[in-house]
Length: 84
Image 1 (cartoon, rainbow, N blue to C red):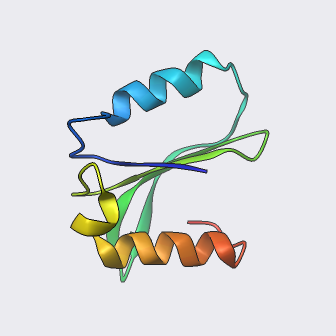
Image 2: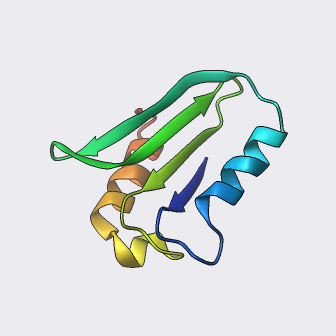
């Protein structure tokens, strides 16, 4: 699993997306918003090999520092094997 804050200026999410696209994995679940408490918390895409890329809305380079609730929810869902 890979996560990027959408306000990260050190490792922009577009760079991470380009790197993942270069791997040529098939898309399993195309881009969609993921939610926390009824609000969009970011966006996610899943690939056929079970790689998931997610963004955290308002997150910077250290996304948990900027958006701790959203990052905790994302980690908890991953540990519980639940989708975003």
